[in-house]
Image (cartoon, rainbow, N blue to C red; front, side):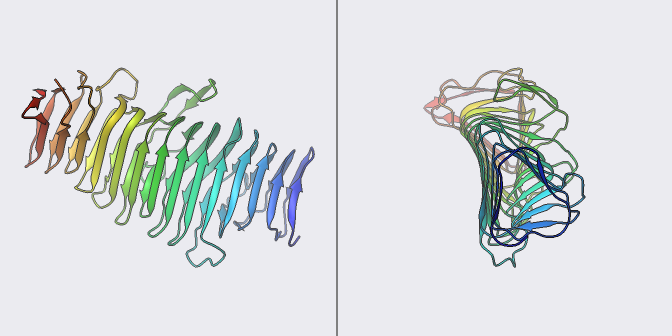
Length: 355
């Protein structure tokens, strides 16, 4: 089949099991469109799944690759399900275009990637994802996956679940792996810690794999998380864990559920101006452990510190800074070593340190 497009509007299944198709667009409005050809599928057009189901290589051991310019939209309770992997702009030599937009915003729609979802995997290419009121399941999610590549994930509502733990030494949720990645978390839930949770629809979901959220990895990795709402539940937050990337986490609203926050090297920064941090079991505020190993942790809240059982470890020229307006702040269980700095309040408005 060549040229034109596919419009799947009716019951039953349209199955592509052999041969090639050269089409500019795919629209699945009802029933199922299934590709079961055992080779990598390179596609550069538009895809709209608006109420139906699209399945790509669920049984074969090959991935789907979006190249060039285009939009993948999953709308109106539609389902997009890819098997082994899902690469966006893999080849920097691709001359078809510069990037892809992925729109996952249908009520009760599902976006399922059984293997890796690697966004912007080539220099000079971009990948943008918008998720709203939908569920996305990834084996691994990498936002910004090549030097010179640029990826952005806007999470306005819905649920993201990370379902594997065997990529990059157990790092299956990465913002900025060699490339430039940004996660804008304004609502919904990101889940990557074993437990049973309530999703955005009020239904129970079970997570079985454990992963940290990694921000800034690799020599050219630049990761940024802007967290203004919603909840991120992970098995640790690691900023610049390999000591060569650049990572920034800005928490101004919403909640983090994590037992640990690690801020490494001078290129790692955590800015906390609002929102809540609790341990992974949601036991209470300030029950996590923060390690500032050469990085910077800025506590900019104006409402004072909450007491808790957490530890603060500052070492190797790290900096823990408690903002000017923290009246009567209470910082407990801290250790400072190796030329690091601990600053609490100001001379006119000191806080309280308890070790």
